[in-house]
Image: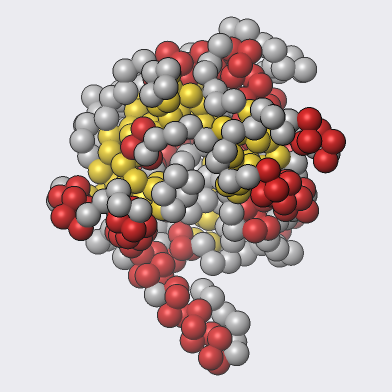
Length: 419
């Protein structure tokens, strides 16, 4: 394993594994942040017989699940989640939660745990991790630079921190261009956007100013041409030596908004060659624990090129679970010292579908001549998994479905409530 980061890898000081038998209750789990992924994680942990808590934003849909209990954190405002969660977990008020397994479902959660890892490890059970590598994967620019050093293909990218630097790049930039915040969770927390797409030089300058105003810098990235179904992901769990314990891949069918939004339709499928490329990056940076990386096939040279890396549970976790790779149960069992069950061969061709957002994607694609109603209907005529809805736990999906109506009612009544 090659280590190229500034500091050496240090051994984890997480709470030692505890063995819970029939006469000893299972440790609770605290799920930090997240959306559909947090909901999937608490459902899977609760089905093991363990208590699940969530610490999240006040309007998170997972808080309405019957499989968990929501914990209120004082002083929480948009953009300060990492610091507010850390202060709460280390304060006296949280002492009844000590001994719980702490799991991250968002970038802010990773930041929280990395920033307070030594103190948290004295009170909670933490997953295997190399905090230096996790921080590097949070930083988009650092991720791309390390990928290049590892020999992993990336889109072309540039850095411009000033007007003079941007002007010097005028002849190199290609359009459309993606302006990505180096720390996307900081920008998204302030603006609700993950990135900005610029179609000309003036738009790049404006986008850089917008990202800087949010409290983070950006990286300029070439947009790989082609539809969203060229996007694919790899999932694994990396041991103490950054060795993968299993391999899982999936593809994206559609995103909304197309080209730059979140995925709204996924399918499990084996993508040949992806594990080798992904683990080249993981080994180079010394990543440990949960690992997920997204690539896009560039038909210009036939290479899969890195989009982003996440060292946590992701939004498609319920699909990964449905296919036979129950990541939440796998991690929980390891940390609780429960005998681990071998990963069964996972199922291909399973689909995760967000009906409302996918219909919006269809409308956008039809408007641009890339889809028809019949093609869309044919594509969804399959057995589906849904990101929020489960018959045994319908409240989160119901709260999500009625959110626009509840917002309207809040405006009419002047209550300002959105939950």
